Length: 149
Picture 1 (tube, one colour):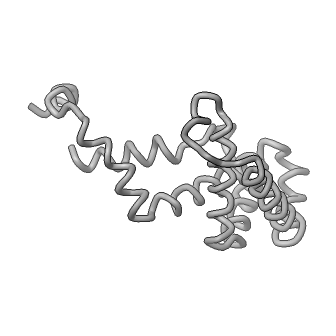
Picture 2 (cartoon, rainbow, N blue to C red):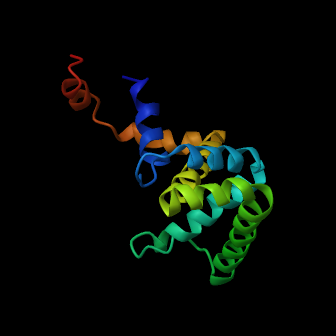
């Protein structure tokens, strides 16, 4: 059963809302975005996503992100998106908007978001934290449900 757990965790934590299948222009923009971001850029993206999710009323209590920290994350994200679309990948941006529209743009950034989350989750401390729930699993029930008696 052990090999199943990492796959489930990755699917649960890296999954972002899915849209229509990405077209070739979205794929090209996604590749450009991935190739033209640094590890710091992807961490900034993950930080922005974290701060944004922490605004949810049921999660807010778990984060001590101040309004200043939120604003800083927004500023960094604004600069990053501007740089990516206008300076690092302008041709791909133009093509995706002309041929695939906002759905193509969404799909390209979904891929970048997944890349950022995978990079963040590869940190040993994060991996350890992601696996810490395992001590609360009811092994007997899981084995029965999986047919592993």
